[in-house]
Amino acid sequence: MANNEDIFKKVIAHAKEYGFVFQSSEIYDGLSAVYDYGQYGVELKNNIKDYWWKAMVQLHENIVGVDTAIFMHPTVWKASGHVDAFSDPMIDNKDSKKRYRADVLVEDYLAKLEGKINKEVNKAAKRFGDSFDEQQYITTNPRVLGYKEKTEEIKKRLYGAMDAEDLKGIKTLIEDLEIACPVSGSRNWTDVRQFNLMFATQIGSLSEGASEIYLRPETAQGIFVNFLNVMKSGRMKVPFGIAQIGKAFRNEIVARQFIFRMREFEQMEMQFFVRPGEELKWFEYWKEERMKWHLSMGIPAENYRFHDHDKLAHYANAATDIEFNFPIGFKELEGIHSRTDFDLNAHQEYSGKKLQYFDPEQDKSYVPYVVETSIGLDRTFLAVLSYSFTEEKLEDGSERVVMKLPPVLAPIKAAILPLVRKDGMPEKAREIMDKLKVDYMCQYDEKDAIGRRYRRQDAIGTPYCITVDHQTLEDNTVTIRERDSMKQERIKIEEIAQIIAKRLKA
Ligand code: ATP
Image (cartoon, rainbow, N blue to C red; front, top):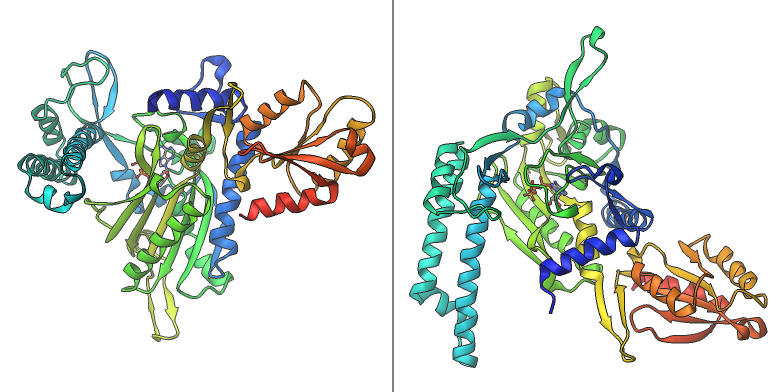
């Protein structure tokens, strides 16, 4: 069986071959961690955006959307803390010349310890069979306890050093754990240094007195600085939310995981403004809502898990990640954070403008607390793509690659295929195409044998293939082939739209 790394490579190759994702500027050998979306990729991406927007904005009467600029006043990033603190500790291996995030090296070590614990538990579960009590085992088995103790000790040191910005402490921890470079295998490390992740550029021509501004590293601040505008112009009442989809830029140190970690990416964020004191209730609400959203796409629940943060940012009083089982392991897909009144307070202080809400029920003004849901569009794309990628061996011995995309997200909803390129079939197929394309993204294809055309549609995840044959010309029926089961049925032409519509709602 192929291992996960192989699957990841196949997904990347498939994404390129079928026009989902290309390396940026590929003819110039590409630009590291920057990607372009191709003809099917852009459709899938737009569908994910729509699916999110509908769930967040259309279905919540108290959430509205905005689309704010990528460039913002530089003081925004002072107030938000990004100028001073949006940095990662990095370390270079002197032999391989590879650069790593120092905290990630330690976290990978912790993941290995967790793997060892799981291995022990699985072994014991096999040994003891039905009588196995996992809880008892992990709280009493000396080996497991040893791993756990070590884990706790390392976490304490890592987070302690990170909080205190003790870069020497992080280096010492890496040395004490004898962590080696995964590429060279050596422990020949440089010192740990801080590296700010924001891209800076100049605005205005030099003669006018240019000033340095940043490409936004998150979309959230565009929401915070428009809090008053939206509240007033939209007559919003707490609790209410503001949602936004847009580009964000981070000069990531480790950028080798396809579209999982990019330097230019897109976020789908929502800031929910609530009464102080009610934020933890809303935090729980959004945790559940967001998980429901993920599951509503039809990807089985075992592919998702919550990861509550041990280490909270200084402004947060609760935080969790929704992690997805990517081919590179369980990793963060979405963050849900209770951010208190940190951001609005900071903007109030730096701008000198009051950013408060008058609560008629409480008869007082306050700075609302904020619960944020922040999901990476590209990571959702990767999650859906890697989950959907399926290699199948068919009964007749042949193989097919099929993208079992949730139909609502599929780039093309139906392909219209004349069986042969003569006898009036292309004309009939065109007629069907012209009607259907008004409501659905469809594709007309008359090239090659029908079997090959089906495979091409499987490879891009098209839920239905509609074939026009001799019988169509006689009785206005077509065959409709379903992607996953490959079953074909004969139906009336008028039924096609209905069948597609039904599948998109399922
Ligand atoms: P990580 O720990 O993986 O760097 P983060 O905790 O910094 O992520 P947030 O700042 O919480 O991420 O951003 C919210 C979401 O934006 C993430 O859950 C992720 O889906 C997405 N995201 C963040 N950085 C990137 C990136 N470099 N490329 C693609 N998506 C990203």
